[in-house]
Each structure stands twice: as structure tokens, then as C-alpha cells.
Image (spheres, rainbow, N blue to C red):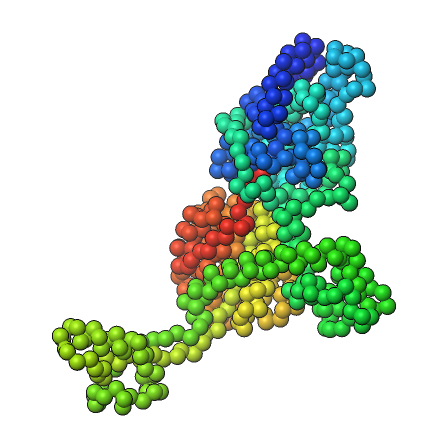
Amino acid sequence: MDERDEFLDNSNFFNKILLVSADLAAIIHKNMGMRVGQSTVCSQKLHTFDLKTPQEVNILQDIDAGQTFYHRKEPGSIYHLDIFHECGLVDHHIAAALIRAAVELYNGYYGEYIVNDPDNKVEADLFDIQTGTGGGRITGSLDYGKKMSLRKGHRNHVHITMALPQKHVACTVYVIMAVENAILSCNLELRRNEKVNNVKSNGKGKIDLSAYADQSDSLLQRNNSNKIYDTDEKKQDIAGFMGKFNTAQVSKISTNNHNNNGQKPTGDVNSIRGVEGLADRGIIELNDNCESLIKSGKQVKHFFEQYLPEIEIHLQQVIRNAKYFFDQTGGSKKLQNKLSCHGGQDDSHNIKVGHEYGEVNISESISAAARRMVASNDKIFKITHADLRYMTKRKRQKIEFCILIDASSSMEGQRIHAAKQLAKFLFLSTADPISVIAFQENKAWVQVPFTRDLQQLEERLEEIKAYGETPLALGLTACIQYLEKSSVHNPLIILITDGVPTSGTITSDPVHDALEVAKRIKFKKYGFTCIGLKPHLNYLNQLAKIAGGSIYAVDELERVGTC
């Protein structure tokens, strides 16, 4: 028997932790959390950490774990444990088995020494677990929590949530020791939490957990029919819904009446398919070829009316921010000043519009005359031939937009939907061809070849699913190779990413590899811009500089690591 098991299976140990648990209960009562032992953070709140300093954990006092994870109406009903270890995989089956055994031991001692009531006990059915290998209810199949972003986010800690009456708070110590034993059995070291901060969140009590959402057999979840949606959840639901239909269909939902007076749905294949899709998703009901919104459809309609404009404005703002770069890359008419030194009369009225040098740039000509007047100390203002400045309209050069989308696991949820919508809005705002290249795990591929076919773009974008590592160097290389094979004249690469690369292709340093490939973009004289997140602004700035381009940081998709 392991030394830790001997501690658990000992009545003296049980009596000692009763005293310790009183301190924990007092901290919990103050809406705070604390470190238990060296590796565990315990509270009834949400925990976050900066990816650069995972040893420092923040307890968000204004975000209740039960309300956030399980949409429970009442706060303070769920205990939240994060037990930290060196980066690696803890078998959640082993951890769950040890927790079940620990709960059984605790119940035995509690019933014998405290109330002599075997029925007054902790219910193991109300415990959930998540590790880097998966999760679920500890008494269930443990076949849940398999989503890549969820498993990746738990490679450095074991996450436990449990419905625990306050009188049973001592059970948390049994659970912690059981999990620590499971971590050690997987040949991983425990990691000390250097600092625990009890703080308020920066998002007014809201935080985006779309990357951590997944199917579960948890019994802690409130009944779905009573689910309470907060603002962030509405946006996420809308973002996911928008990914299924094009902009015109979405707008139609928010403007249609509850029915169409019995008229048969009309339109092209896309619109008919959209109507059928809305019926499949429980938004509308089709009766004798007429459409009517059902109850859930009315709720979706309300969500769209309230939040769709906000989402569109955000994406349009991203495009407007990048517009200057597009213009400088050759997108719009350019004005070029020319100096005319040909002979002739000094009377400006004899200058003809449409001169061989182009149209007269009046403001620049006046400025030139004023500067000459000051320099020569003339008393009379006049415009001579030497002062004339002209402008010529260059023929608009076609831009070939190549959108490079980071489809790694960290982009899952709202981010990947935002990237897809950006591609759609860019398509609708220009007459130039657009292509899409995606990269994830150990591959990069052309998802949408250069096209002006909106249906093709939307259908192929929908196929992109986020998972895996971030091979940025591979994505940039694939983009360059595709442009080299295509007949392009003025290509502009638009990289959409949320972080730094995690997978290399040339060396073992993925950050260095991406910077090396970026040099080729500048050498090829390809246009380049990056739409990224501020937490990684320094690296993305460096990448854009080496590629000879620019970066536009997005605040709204900013995230922190969540435990």
C-alpha cells in the first residue's frame, strides 16, 4: 500500500483534517480560495492563469464555478479543485478510481466518528474530472472530455468539480491526496503553486469558455430547459449558428415575420437549403410549404436582432483597420505627383485639364507656389509652370487575397467562426479573387482555391474544424508555394491567428521556424498582414516586420488560460 493510501486509511488522519477543513470552510465563506498543500488550488470560483506563468493562479471571486460550468442558479454549491503537475498526461480512469475509493473511505469514517449515520455521506456520482486524457463523471463511462482544446488545456493539472455540502468540506483533502497519488503513478511530478491571487475578473463577471465546452454525462448540470444564457453564451451560440448559414440567410431570420402567409419558400439552391437547415435545427416549422417560427426560433430571432449587428460591426472594423494596408499593397487608385519643367507662359489659366502629365493637383500646386514665394521673398503670389504639380490615375491593380487561417485547437469556438466570417465579409467587400489556406497539427492545405464563387467559399469554410497544434511555419510555407504556382500579380497574405506557433517544421524551435519562413514573404515581395491577439502582440509584430507587413490586434477575442 502506498504511503498516501496509508494516510487516508487511518482514523487519526481523519480526525486531524477536521481541524484543517475548518480553515478552508472559513475562506470559502468569504468568497475566496486558497492553496491546499503545495499543488492544489481550492475554491468555489473560476481559476485562471497566464500561460507564461502557470505557477501563479488567479481565483476570480466574481465568477462562481457552479454557475459558469453548469449554469446553476444558486452560487456556492460547487467546489472546484485544480491539482497541478508537470506537463504530461494523467490517466483520468486511474484518477477517478482512486477518488471513488477515497470518497468511500471518507464516508466510512464520517458515518462512524461524526454522526453514526451511514446514509449521511458524500455522493461520488456528483464528482466530475478532467485531465489531459479525458474526463466525465467519476462513476460514469469516462468517455467524455475528448475535445482537443479541452485535453490540451489540462495537460498541466487535474480539474475536479464536486457538489459538496459544507459539512463535508473535509472530503476535499481525501480527494486531493487521491489525485496526487494518481499523478505520481503516471510518473509525473507535482508542481508547486508559487502564488494564489484572489481577484476580480476583467470582464465584468463574464469569460469565454467555448474552447472548454464539450459533451458530458455530469449530474451537476442544471436541467437544459432551465438553462440561463448570459451575454457571452448568446454570442457564442450566434457565432456557431452563423457558421452554418450565409449572411443573407441570417439577416432574413432577423427581419422575417413569424410566417410568410403560406407562400412557398423561393430562391436558389442556397436559400432553399438554408430553409431546410433552419427546420432541421428547430428554428422554423414547415407546414404545407409555409414557414413559421417555433418557440426556439423566436428566441434565436431575438438573439440575432440584438447581437448580429454587434458581430458584423466588429468584423467590419477588422476589415477597415486593414484597409490602409490593402491600399498600400496596390488595391486602389493612386495619385502620383509630377513636376513639370516644360516651357510656356506663366499664366496658370492656360493649363489644360487632362494634360499629358495628368490632371493638375491644385492643392499641391498652390503649396509649391507658396513655398517658392517665401524662399524668393516675392511680394506677389502667382503660380508658374515650375510650381505645377500633376496627378495621374494608375489603373487599379487586382489583388489576390490569400487568407491563411490558424485552425489549431486554441481557435475552436468563437475564434474560428470569427475567422470564417472575416473571410466572407472580405469576399463581399471586394471584387478580387480570394483563396483560403488552413493549417493545424502537422499539415497545411488549400481549403479554397482562388475564387469569386460565394457558395464554394461558404461550403468549404464550413468544413474547417479546429484541433491540434499550431504549425505556423508549415502554413506560411504552404501559402508561399501556392502563390508561386498560381498566376498572381499582386498577392496579399492575411494571416488570422490567436497565438504563437507550437509545432516546428525545420528545427525543434517552432517560433524560429516561422520567422525564417516569413523572410521568404518579404523576398518574394508579397503583401502581408496579420490579424492577431494582443497577448502575443510582440511575437506577431516581429513576424510581420520580418515579412515586410503589418499587424492588427484584436481585443475582443483575447483569452486567458482557464483551469
